[in-house]
Image (cartoon, rainbow, N blue to C red; front, top):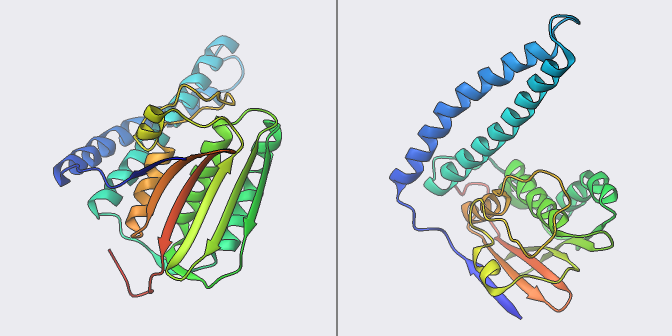
Length: 243
């Protein structure tokens, strides 16, 4: 079995500050671009030709994707620098697993991929529910993006003495050593796995890593005999704990 465990990158705080500043500057311009392209697509009939209306819609969709990338980059930078504070509440991990699986069923069905959840009841743990929901969603979407029709993706959660172990696995062929080593790098797109054709930012696993580490946890990827498993370890936390 091949395992890659990736820790926090050694980026200086100034690097994260620079990313945050660039994201802030670009977000304002893109927001305006989205708004004005929206005005064009909603213009009364006859103001624009159908071709021009389609151009405006392409501009809006492209800008939306760019804004999503900027928002994810800003969140990664904030989590790595400690600027983004966690909103800690008591969360049921099994309940969150079931929620994410239910939300992603339409995506899995449209791709002819089986998605199921497996969980074991355990104590609630203190975490940022919004961020943890985003982490689990990113992991599931990543596996669905990498899968092919007929594959199975499983999201599971199991409690242990010191925390929760959450895994998402697939039944595909796995990755090469080089790909495993780069899997959690921002914008990295593995070439050995086919995609479902949906648009991906290339930041999902980098964001998952940042969220896991901001909670004091770890994330790793394993090639197993039945495919690939991405595992997140989340230690028990008290409500009073902050980064």
